[in-house]
Image 1 (cartoon, one colour):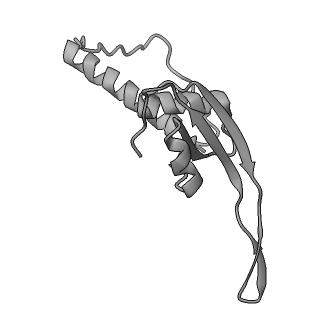
Image 2: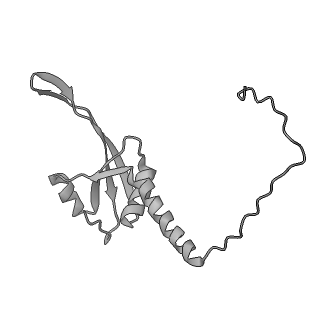
Length: 131
């Protein structure tokens, strides 16, 4: 009958456990700051999936415009923050375009491609992203 919990609790008996004092070293603070930077990069890394490599993208790269496949939930502000965190470059502007789904016919069956989003990231003169 332990599931009914019919026993009365004893009053006046209090157990106190003293915790030892913990002194944090300044080295740990520096390590935690580095982890926060890496954590910020990993948060924004999910919005930029991969650079989009195509003939058009390579010609645009000479004009300081880079093309990325991005998450469907990403917006311009998140993409700009992700580029800043991952590539250490501040974008001048960002444009986002949807990639429509396309139908395929393979092995006698109809199917569709995934679609998604792509982003054009414009940089200032002199800034570069190594892909």
